[in-house]
Image 1 (tube, one colour):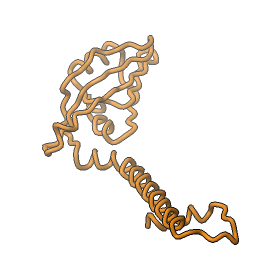
Image 2 (cartoon, rainbow, N blue to C red):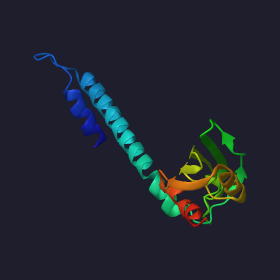
Image 3 (tube, one colour):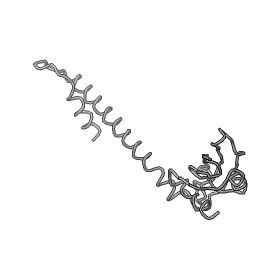
Image 4 (cartoon, one colour):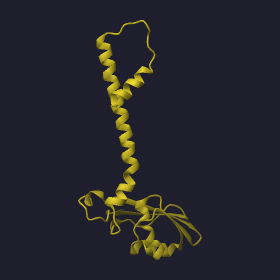
Length: 157
């Protein structure tokens, strides 16, 4: 498949009609075609793996029991924008759990005492206290399934 793709690409190159190509040149072009084809297959596989990473991570690696290993104090960017950062475990009892401790950042935007949370992190007592000082949560927006797993904590709090 890889060589076929590469050969098709090389056939698009301009050729000099009437010139005989040596067998060494044909062999070199076949080798180049195989390399180009392998690179294309590799790129497609990388794109496929990356596009499936979130569903795989959320369905098979993460769990509802994710826990916070470390929390940083609430960081105020501007008067209306705040950031809450944490290191969280995957929450799954698999052999991957220790290697999948990940960084989680929640952005909090305040409009008066109304708060919008983007990419919610696990709700800890410290986060709950920080949010209570800022106002009441009016909107929770999760941009991927990892953060979506944290939304029920904010909806019931």
